[in-house]
Image 1: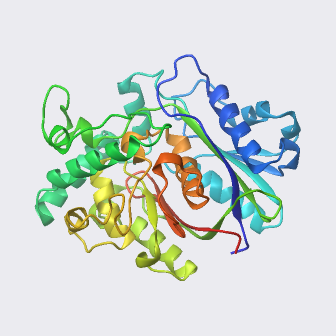
Image 2: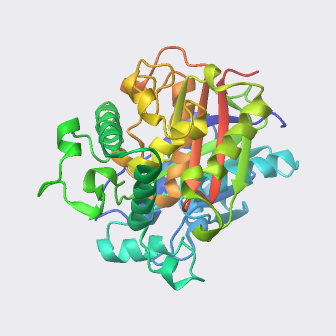
Image 3: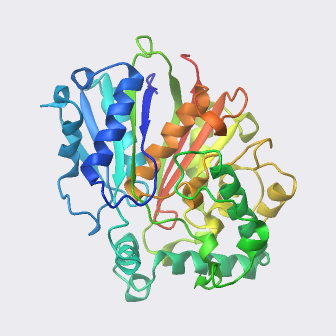
Length: 388
């Protein structure tokens, strides 16, 4: 690919912000990203906004709210991108394509969602619209129910995954303690995550509350540039792959995670690397069973063997490929349109040594895997440190 670099990032805290509007979140993330890149809105050629919406937001024309952050953005083309829970990555990839096509040199990418002002049933219904609506049986499923089916299928094929899922939840909550942007900075022990209790009820059997990502408000932003030289720091996007699978679940095996696997394999091939070269990964753990399956997609283990990389410590901080140092969607939060941009922003901070208390020593390569729907829209990005 043409040389494309992330040269600045912005990131609000994720959480419940009753007094803050969608515009407030967009403006905060945008201003931080521009400041970190050392530029103004006038230096941006195009804007792309990831935003799922689907009935949750009151602001129907969100892409044009980005201009509120900087008067220099006036008259810059702004486009909203929607691809379910991968809307943020969809916006980032649209920005990369604009640079590749020679239509832009610098692109601002923002992801945002405001969800907590809606009730849990309303959010569940809105997110459910990312499932196949052409089959009444599938249309009736919430996403917790979809991934509950995955957990049941995993149990039938490979053995009960609930203990592994509880370990993933506890790991990600421990990681989030070092991330001041995370929504739930609360240590949850394996025992707490593994039990069914009043505080950890079943949501969609066998999924417990601790297996499910959070309903969140928040925004993130990055500045993409064809030339990193004028900027204080940069991380190069070494490879990027987008793979979309059939929407109806009846047409693919959710346990196969073939879309994420293909996206990761294509990104590795384009980058000329293997999983052993990767220093960390931020992956889409909308439910803990999804992270367990992502271990297979990353190439860390064979099908049904995700427990092995938990047992040997591979995916923990200090392991050979720590996963979701940020706390992941599980503990950092999941404001849907912001998630993909957040993952890339925090990977940029890891690679530039600016990740604070979640920083690891001298990472050279990181991988981001963002997923929309039940392994339907899949984005895999390899990022590297430096200006190569």
